[in-house]
Amino acid sequence: ACSVPVSEIITVEETDIHSRHYGRGKWQKMEKPFAFTVHCVKRARRHRWRGAQGTFCSSRPKHLLVFINPFGGKGQGKRIYERKVAPLFTLASITTEIIVTERANQAKESLYEINIDKYDGIVCVGGDGMFSEVLHGLIGRTQRNAGVDQNQPRAALVPSPLRIGIIPAGSTDCVCFSTVGTNDAETSALHIIVGDSLPMDVSSVHHNSTLLRYSVSLLGYGFYGDVIKDSEKKRWMGLIRYDFSGLKTFLSHHCYEGTVSFLPARHTVGSPRDRKPCRAGCFVCRQSKQQLEEEQKRSLYGLENTEEMEEWKVVCGKFLAINATNMSCACPRSPQGLSPAAHLGDGSSDLILIRKCSRFNFLRFLVRHTNQYDQFDFAFVEVYRVRKFQFVSKHVEDEDSDLKERGKTRFGQICSDHPPCCCSVSNSSWNCDGEVLSSSAIEVRVHCQLVRLFARGIEENPKEESQS
Image (cartoon, rainbow, N blue to C red; front, side, top):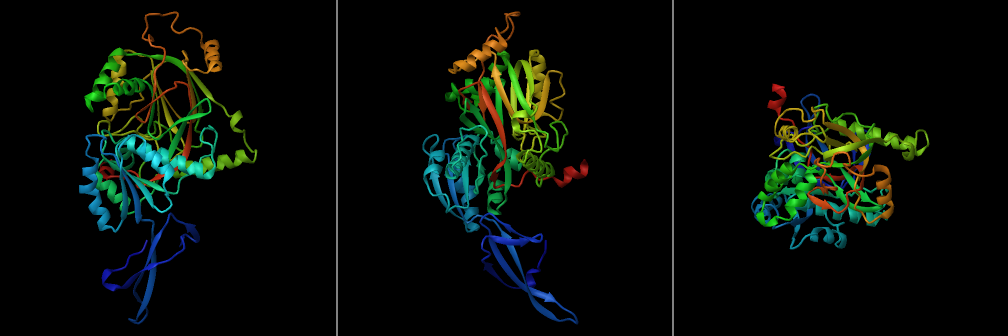
């Protein structure tokens, strides 16, 4: 880092660096960079002054594609953008093309059709659902251009060169809150303006070699799956439907029997219970990615076991909830989130298994999401950091006859010994970032740092650091 007194600047001019800049002893490629050269005064010997110059590089966006959801959250997306964001973009000389969506999946479909090469980034104004649309459109477009089959569970997905900016205007804004630390629209706009770049993991969810969806925050079966499925039937209630469905699901207290198979993330530096949250400039994310890349290189050259021979762990039983989080899933109601130490770019997901327990104990577990206590400190809760996992319920209701027969052979009849137990319902649904998945049997794989956001991670508060 270097500084130049404003009073000693001679002139400033834009610089053409042909998409490269020099730093740390080597040429590095940047994301559509902008550079400027500062000509200033340099002091020499015997009180002599000489002219000097320094070139500063920035990847700040100049032209953005903006999608606005006018219906999400409280329907304030357009108003928030016009009052809080647009004036800042104008001040920063950022030009925009705005699309106000009129129906679901319009943003996703648009990203498949339009020429996105002329933009420096994509901005979505809305909630987590709007971000998910843009995410699916951008990843899908990138894979199509690269000739990658998204339906192949083991396909190596290609990262998109464009960053995504989130202007929060939804009901929970979980992704924004977990990556910035607040759901304040002006803060997010400033992160976009200064050109921040934050890599983030994405999980692909497959069933029978068919891509169902991508997930960046929560995959939830059981409790959270039942909540989202029930709330979809009550959209007429508005945002209160989530509270109503949550209470109804808690009182029904259903548990589900099945098998979870997972591949532990041995490349990661941290663990789900180390109380080291992901923060700006995260060491865990950097180190974990480097170790994952080294592991993949060794596997490529046959120095270690291949993927087929890796040691999978299997957990069977009755579960009230099965959650997988790629991030903390923090929000204003749950400042610590579902997994406080989950990391955004370490190539892993935190798999949380809540086994069958009493309604009172489950309530104790849920309450801990709102306070500072360790929510994994229960005998009925297990948490693992994983690279991949699969789930098959005991009662498989899929059309695939082979999968159904295998399920019958492996598991037999459910709850035959204890008919009156809470397993009265055979299958739950998966909640994938707020959307209901049609199949309960899924295969999930984490793709390390597949997308980038206009963010830098949650910054440490100096006052909090001094107190700790």
